[in-house]
Length: 292
Length: 271
Image 1 (cartoon, helix red, strand yellow):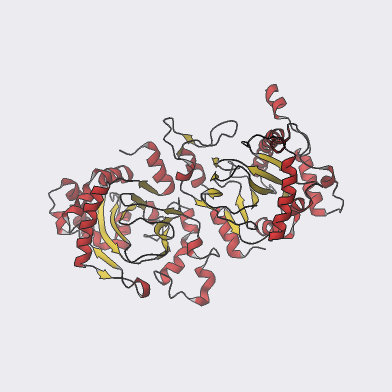
Image 2 (tube, rainbow over the protein chains, first blue to last red):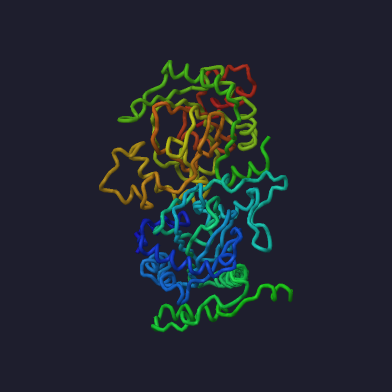
């Protein structure tokens, strides 16, 4: 459970670092499962240098330990503290990251309440790929005002640039945007609000992380609209990543996990909600876009 | 002189950095003048314990012609004209030398104080890093409501400048976010001589790290032209001395400098 001060910290700055949550042995188990899965991706099977991010769902029998993290009491207690047990755990993905990630929030609609719990598998600092965040940027006016900051290459969400683009190439580079880097060691967790502006710079072409996503139960009409928008956008992004990693689409959720063999009521609640939102359908972005 | 991007940067984050605004040759002259001022030690010693070697010189800019030139230099004056608007006023200067750590605070606390823009301009004499005395700021914290949520950081600052006498019985209040001041999320203005930072005095800022005895910086303070009674009251609340500018500035040959101070006595006399 988080302390009252940690909860205040999260709500004020939009993120929190939690040290030494997972043990060395647990990190090693995650890495072992990661190695097997990475080897099965297109890049893993290729001899060429890795230039693209590989990402996959870990909710299945081939990643038993990683899969268990989404419901691990240490993780769940964090989210319980922040969202009063009124939320859905919707994914536990592993990623092998490459290169930099330009500045963006995962949710631009401030009625979208959700968070990510990140577990990196190697030590990271500001020079080798640690997550950079602008503290407090999950809320307005800071959140929206950042859009007027001219950046060198702001992230494109597939529809538009998220921040202002300087046409002369003079915008701020990633490292020039005032922020703090979340320096971590394996076993630490970074928990951040979807709406927080973040980026990363530097690091190897196999920067490993596990990312767990939790969405707070929407109560108001605005929150429900925001969640529905976010669900649609994330389905598209996940479909693109699945095709990039494996060359084909498929359900992100293994039938064994969805079967919920232990009849866990919390997991069942999550599954029922995700089914309603269409998470278990195979989403083909190219078909949808060609129809439009 | 400032780009649209720089103006947006200041409005959004509450500060603006001009990297290498002054050349090494210029900095050598500025540093020489500053060292003369510290050598005279016209200021008062501040702090206690490890801060006992610190010196703060008042009228740092007003009393040395080389440093006075900074106040009207296009790179400073011109930038301020864009950030504060025309008719901005002079609010004093200081020259800090020595080990001075400062817990999180904003310079002008109080209800609505952040609605009236006052700025500080720092030139550091030595290179600084996050762990060796760089100014740390919380970007965007000059604006409401973020500003108000951080006011609890002032609890520790109000105890003492370096928290040395922090009330251990009130630990929760002094660590409102559960972490030490050095671990509060922030941006560190790591700098080299020649860099200049302009910051809104209501932005939350601090200094931590291993500070050497040689840590030195020059600071100039400015405020937007006061246009309503509340602005005058805000100035009086924290910096009543603004209304008694140094005669060196009142009698300056520079129209820019005189323009920043000539109405101040009259403004203050009405309150």
